[in-house]
Image 1 (tube, rainbow, N blue to C red):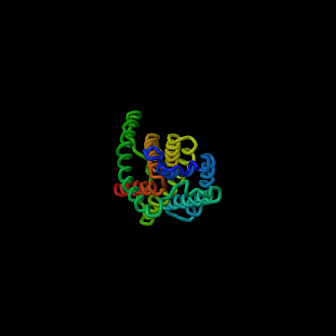
Image 2: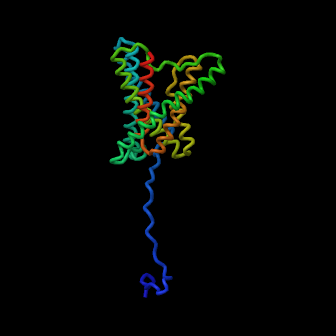
Image 3: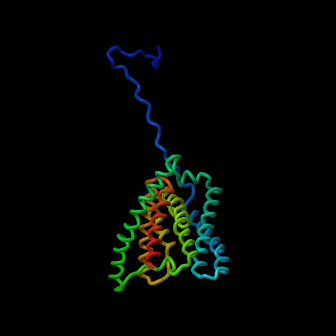
Length: 261
């Protein structure tokens, strides 16, 4: 009689097969792009976005409106270039970047809204106040972040600014700094390196010329913002939650800026 068909022993000592092992947990695929490839494409996208700003800067007489409209147009071009590159060179990018499963979208949106409501006061009134106090102690001067939204915008200017700050900028920045750059670094060099890369890149893109104390304050807050959003993206496993959190962050900031002005 073969070993596979040995009858059970009457004393109950015959080995009984255990339950089948559980199916392996879903493992997100690693990024197929390197950080330097992503950075090169992003710089190219910025150059093409700069070309797209020319008609707005040339034909719109209102300087503030021209600036915000050209910024929005450049961001849309950047998103288009990134998506075209990912779709052609890295066709599995959607599974790498991560999107919610069917039926999970609303849950991820709710999570992003809640996180964004915590993120703004935590960073601006927490990290921002600490950095402001340190910079004031070092410089002996009152520290104020540079103006991100021009004062005295027309109604059209406010609408365009809202569309850019609430929709376009979060999509652009989360796709690249979390979905592309963070994953490109994190999957090769570890979570810590990915968090730092995401934060530093996010900080640099928010550079605004002005008194050094204010510039350092804004970039410092955005450094922590980029790190926290990357950490949140890592936890949620999809780019939707952190994009929504970013949108909520900008909604609060824009509302305060327009109200104070």
